[in-house]
Image 1 (cartoon, rainbow, N blue to C red):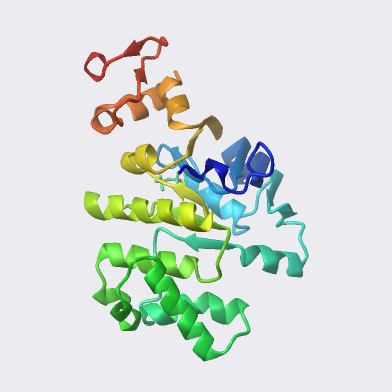
Image 2: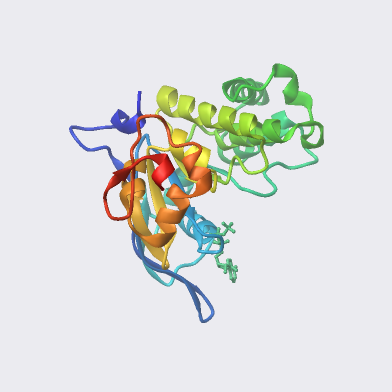
Length: 281
Ligand SMILES: Nc1ncnc2c1ncn2[C@@H]1O[C@H](COP(=O)(O)OP(=O)(O)OP(=O)(O)O)[C@@H](O)[C@H]1O
């Protein structure tokens, strides 16, 4: 089942992040200018764009880690910048983050890593904390004995899963994943995609995923947003990307690599709107 039905009240899915007219600069260098984006409950949103266009900057801005110079961002209806401490605390408990680098504390075991957000935000007994952390380990498909291992003892795929378990520690409504499959072999990456799709379908989890991984975009994402020209150039399902005639979007989604993984039955439409077979592209 696609996630599109999760969290629907009536017809349209609930919007849980709204970014309006967002501008971000570093000194005289403007990175984002008039960016607008919605994230819907229960979807896997893939966020793409050329290197250095500002995908991580936007992610950090949504998380309140980076100041913006203009516009508004609301997460669960709360403008983080204007929010009271209590409001911020409640928003922070409803999101989990898997950063690209430094995902886990190297001096802590997997179990202890998962407990870090629990210690920060929850007032529960050590026993309950341990039980909850073990449940998260199971949820992300790690073996029970991973609990006592240090990050240096884990494979790349296990590290990503353990980091996801930590992002899920507080049972968030949304997880932000910054290039979660980078560095994984294709099988590991496909398994990770399967995992987030399962979490979307079973928990109704919303996933905001910055990625360069075409397989993830084609197989796992319900919608895709493309960052270019300092704003969201185009957003929508894969079909919208395939039909868009922006040169970068065309090259990205119709390029040689993309053509090897276009799912069967999905038409590739050329820039002039004419359907064509893979061989004609
Ligand atoms: N704290 C900062 N101070 C100054 N410039 C910054 C800062 N953070 C990011 N930038 C600049 O903002 C631009 C966008 O960076 P960002 O990391 O968001 O790109 P990206 O789209 O995530 O790239 P990639 O796909 O390579 O990870 C880059 O030019 C970067 O140098």
